[in-house]
Length: 123
Image 1: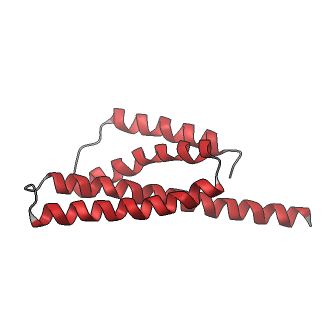
Image 2: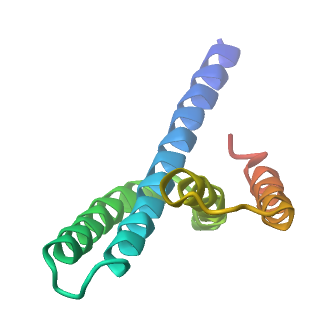
C-alpha cells in the first residue's frame, strides 16, 4: 500500500515539474515579444502589439509562478528558471534564425546538468 502512495506522489511531483517547465517556457516567450517589439518603430502599431503581448505574457507568468512557488521549495523553483537559457536558445533559432555556437550549447548543457542535480531528490 505504501508503494502505491509513493508512486502517486512521484507521479504528481512529475506533473508539477512539467508545469514548472511550462511556466518557464511562457516566461521566455515574453523575451521573444520584446525582441520583435525592439525591431519596430517606437509607438508604431507593431511595437504596441508586441509590447502589449509581452506585458500580457508576463502577467500570465506572474499568476502561474505563484502556483509554482506554492508547490516547490523556492530554491528548486529558482534553480529551474535556469532552463530559460535552453528555451531562449530554441526561440532564437526558431524565430530569429540566429546562429548557436558550440560554446552556447556547452554552456546550456552545463546549466541543464546543474538543474538536473538540484531536481534529483524533488522529482
